[in-house]
Image (cartoon, rainbow, N blue to C red):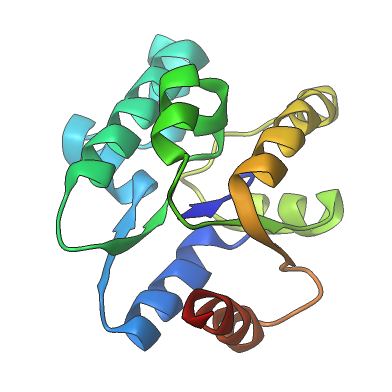
Length: 159
């Protein structure tokens, strides 16, 4: 399970990790679009952020019930849901994080992520203790490349 804010590299690292582990990769953003026909940015704009987050928690629950095991890139918001946090307990979670500057650059490079203000990003820091508590491994993706992150996660999983 890859956890972290929008733009930390969950999709990029998740794809590479799944390939290295020879397993499936499930991306919350892709699942959201498959389920609704819309991306997160569109849902947040049309139906509100709360609706988006409810859908993201549902997608996580569905992904955790699938078999065989997969690398899952969870939406950043899943840690706001008590039921999603409870469901994540006992799973091997990795917290991917990066500086605000790195996250902003990555977020602005894609069209599917919703925009957030500086004030919103500062407020989202409240998720960090939950990411930390759930995760047995923390990786700063602004300080390593994809191959380095994949190698570190694969080594940790092998322990």
